[in-house]
Image (cartoon, rainbow, N blue to C red; front, side, top):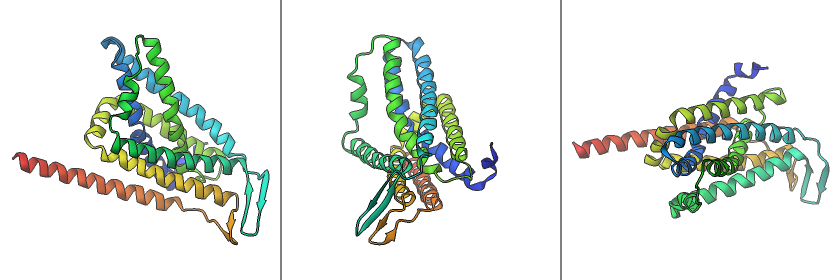
Amino acid sequence: MFEILTSPDAWVALLTLTFLEIVLGIDNIVFISIVANKLPQKDQRKATNIGLLLAMVQRIILLFAISFLIGLNNPFYFVQTSWFTAGISGQAIILFVGGLFLLYKSTSEIHEKVELPEHDEDAVKSKNITSFSKAIVQIVIIDFIFSIDSILTAVGMTNGIGNKPADALILMVIAVVISIIIMMAFANPIRVFINKHPSMQLLALSFLILIGFMLIAEAAHLSHTKFFGQEIGAIPKGYLYFAIAFSLLVEFLNIKMRKKETLKEQG
């Protein structure tokens, strides 16, 4: 069942996906923290932990549901014109719609974080939370919204990995569980780090644009789409891993250099 873990590509995908799940879950942590802070001090930590546990359960359920839908790879409708042909399947539709959603979501989030930095916090603060149960209900809703792009990111990162349909699902579940456990253990330090280095969050959102484009290309490839006789090919995931790893390396070097410059100015 866990033979996929013997593959180096699987470990690279798992590590990359776990990191992305953590970074993309920062908004979730911030929202939960804002909601929990409206509760009495004794209930705040409890609400945060319950919120993250609910996020993990929701994401695993969504993983199974989306993985089942993606398994529907037999075309049920064919489009044939003089310049465009494609065999539409349930798998292609899920990947295509998911890719469009990630492109829209990531672009909108980048716009809000750059142009409207107080948008997310104001949206939650506008809600009047007066009880623990109301806080949990709102956290559940927030978790569900953030689970959608998180799961689509996981699907985009692991689609096509392994020889068995369950291989990608195993990697996704492991990544989600690890990321939630890490977020529960380091929720506050992670939130402080990202707030201190907002470029990391923008970088993660930029990765979403890449993954969204890859999902759309993958949908076209799986449906054997042809434009003017040219079939759309698959994008090797190694290119995506390299781009993400290189970008992260550059950003960590930038953070280290800025820290050194700050220390010099203070000294």
